[in-house]
Length: 500
Image (cartoon, rainbow, N blue to C red):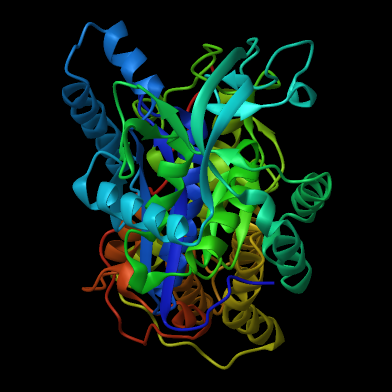
């Protein structure tokens, strides 16, 4: 089941990230995946809103500011927010908006949303007594613990007792189960849906949505002594531009699935909004088998990586190395292997051989093909069908399989070039190079969502005036380069790096 398109507008979101530190490679994993899907939809001609953001109204923000000796919490937030924006720019993330929960537009939205559900009679004051994990910023139960600790942060939760405002989540238990049954693609992958259904059937409880007497956050409009619980506040960021609602895709990591697939739908039911079309919870990107976490001290900095490897190689590795939806383990050695063996030796090799041959033997002009034989016809059909194959994988959220199809196509191109032997005398070099040039053009479009820097460089080598990201995805299935087209001097697209 693909990303559901019910009009031309497409909303794709990442979670909004805590700003108690700069992004690690786990944040980059989610954001790059959302970027790939957003770029692909733009190539298809959709009106895309790719939304990411920063969750600043958190106790973690206060703690982080104090840790570095900054008393003005807003000043700290502004400083860290700029670092996040810079890193997304380095990774070539094409987000259309970045919501900060300290912005007035978000605060206004939260208060309006709250008053909607308050008017439904779904808010009441009560007392919460139980466990609270500061790492998750969530109320949890004993059944969530492993050896008395939060399994994600490996710390014992606090026992708290306080008067809070509650949301009647239990009221929407049956409605949510019915919705999930009637919309089988709502929660994915399938294993995550089963997990959510089991949790709901165990019985939903009303949830606390406020904390009293905090020093940071958004105050409840009905009680100045209470601040919104950070998750209630954060989830409403997705409604920042209602023209694009309901969202086509909430892309999240599996540890925040319940917030998005249980609490958020209940809130939306109460406020009278449609539910998002799909919530996809991918696995963790781990290091030595453990979830990457600032609190565990095992983070990988994407900026440092980008100083040693091309950004597109990092983007490629993040998606290529792990079946999307499952857990993956980060390895710099694997990154180098993928760069050397797949980007450089496969895709880059085919491109450079073809363009260099056209440049040297035909003075940079795409030659006129002779009559096709069966091998040429078969290769032409592959050129025309590859975009359909990649489309099928992307529609079904198999981002890694989409890359695999592109890599397989490049291998087919390499074999065709090798078998045609355009360097040999009395060989049909013109036909080979004509078809290979068109294969390269289509490759440039196909890799744009995954490898935008490289796609643009390749597009310029092919001497096209417009940008590759402005092309039509469907045009990657045609023979578009005409006889006599002039290319620019070829340059190596992917360079191998030495193993360390």
